[in-house]
Each structure stands twice: as structure tokens, then as C-alpha cells.
Length: 425
Ligand code: PMP
Image 1 (cartoon, rainbow, N blue to C red):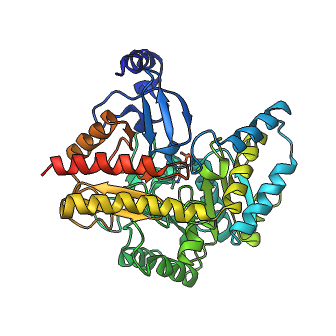
Image 2: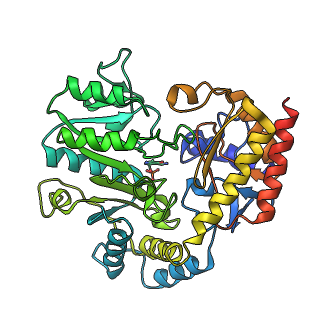
């Protein structure tokens, strides 16, 4: 039953583009009406028609402790009573910066912003200011938010200038963004050779999760560390998803590769809007007001966001067993898929992130990811939704586990997925 969701979606489309405030929520690629959510607790979300669903979107990552964790809510409630925003420094911002440098030692100095998009945009500006170079390498299939310079796709031939991947982005804004291939060192090397002394930074999702989950090939991150260092460029890890998810110290701890700059979002705000960029002191100290790289924000360091984020990080810190528990649950889903689908479906998992790709090839990069049959994914998504499970409404997104998912949730999920996959035979 989705009568009320349908009514709301119709009303929404009259006044909001496509009826949603972020495109993937429109369920466009899965052909269903989006569920309008009324509330969420633990592993469950409840829509406006009263359907309760086991949630594997977890707000696209922040919900690592599940929804409405009582301790987080209490801290937010207390913080609200003291005012919502001041536009002046607060103690919690200091606590956050100190905690970040402890959990991720590469983040000696960090700056809070209000979204992942802003964090990556600002990190790149900092890298350009620091190196006094303009060009940046990103990877096809990695997403770093919607700032103009990062909405690019590769030109038609290798090493040609990139072109905008969105209307409204002037080609001038993207000509300094070079698009290499994830897990393909040669494509990176070629750009460094063709642009000597011009590349400011390489920005990468250390484990890609925006073309579905694609782990880095062994040695790939080490290679990026080496080639950037050798060429005087900075390595930026976009850990908006992986930060505090793969490990308390993020992908950089998980893979033992240390970037120069890191961007964070999602979990670090405990469900409130936040972004962070930070790294080596020497680099970060060129940001205003100390240095010439300008960056600012009315709501930056927001007291409610830091309250939710700090409490979330402290809970994670106090119970590192969370990572093992989440991974075990994710692995059970992974094993179920392998067993039920054989090589008809590729399942990629890293820690508590996983994706099912409806393709029989091994997904290791963008090209193999897009070989997936999105119509099959849409059927899978619809089947799960009709059986009480809320998965990502797109083939090219991750499934997020949380500490709140119970044994019973996972068992139910495995049964539903198994039934669907067996029915496909
Ligand atoms: N970087 C990565 C790796 C992301 O996954 C996202 C969002 N999903 C962003 C940046 C942008 O973050 P936001 O949506 O908060 O702007």
C-alpha cells in the first residue's frame, strides 16, 4: 500500500523538481513511486502509509548506529535547547577537530563545512592553492559531490579534455579536471606524463561506492600515493562514505595508505548536515584566515551537527566491535547471494558496504559496473520493497549495514534475496 506516498509525490512534483530534493530519491531507474518516510528507529523506517521496512540505505551512510539512536538524540535535544546556530566558534568544534586528528592522524588540521560537496570542492581549492597548479585527476565512476569542476565525464579519446556531465556547467570549468580509470594505473600515469608539473591533486574514493561498491585493486592506492608524491601532487581521499565506516580511522586505516588531504561527511555528522576537509598542517594553514585560499560558511561547525557527530563518533570509539558485527552481517548477505545466484550476479563487498551487480562479469571498474542489467536490478529492488526491505533505488549505489540491523533482520533479508534470485533462474 502506497496511497499516501503517491498523493504526496503528486503534490511534490507540482512544487519541487521531480518531486524530490535529491534525484536518486525519485526512484526513476526502478520505476516505482518513492516512499515518503514518516519516521525511523533502529534498522526500520516507516513510510506515510504505515509500512515498516528494513532499511539498507541508512540515509546513504550516516545511519551507522541505526536511526534515532537514543544517546545521539539526547545530545541533539540538549544542544537545541542552547540555540541552533551562532556564527561564532564553539567548544564542540574544538572537540571535533581534536577527535578527528586522533582517529585519523593524517587530519592534523581540519575545517568543518555543511556537506560532502563543499568538503571536496574546498579540499581541491586548497590543493590547487598549495601546489599552485590547476589540474586535478578524478576517476570515472567516482562521485565527489556536485560542484561544477567535478561534474565531468571523459572526452571521447584518451587524454582529451573532459567535458561537463551536467547542463549548466561551462566547459571552461571542467577543462582542468582529467578523468582517469579506477583501478587502472596506466591511465593515471599517462596523465602525469602528458601534463608535467601541472597536476595539483588526485582525488579518489579509496573504496569506490558510487558506481556500486568497487574495492581498490591490490596496490592501486599505494600506486596513487607513490605517483602523486613523485610528481609533487597531493593525494586526496574522499572518505565521505568510507570515513568511520570501513574502520574508525576510515579507508586510510583499513588500507594503510595515508593521503595528504581527506574529505568527510555523512557519519561524522551523525545524521545532521556536515562535511569536513583536512590534512597536513602545512597544507591546511593556507586556508583563510591564515592563508590565501578563501573558504567560509554561515552554518559551518553548526552546534547541532557537532553534537550529533561527536556523540556518534564517541559511541563508535567506545565499541569497536561494531565493525566486526556489521561486517559479519554484510558477509551473510554476500554469502547468500553467491550461493543463490552463482555467477549470474556479481557481489562486491568491503566491510559493511556491499552491492549486487546483475552481470556475470567481475566488477572491477566503471566499464564492468555499467555492464549490469539495470532492468533486473529494478525487479530485484521492487521485490525487496514489496517484501519489507528498502534497498538502494539504483544499481549503482551501495547497500549500507548498520549496527542496529538485528540477526532477525538479516535472516529475513537473506531469505527474501534468496527467493528472488532463485526465482530468476
Ligand atoms: N563524496 C562522496 C564519496 C559521496 O558519496 C558524496 C555523496 N554521496 C559526496 C562526496 C557529496 O556529499 P553531499 O551529498 O553531502 O554533498
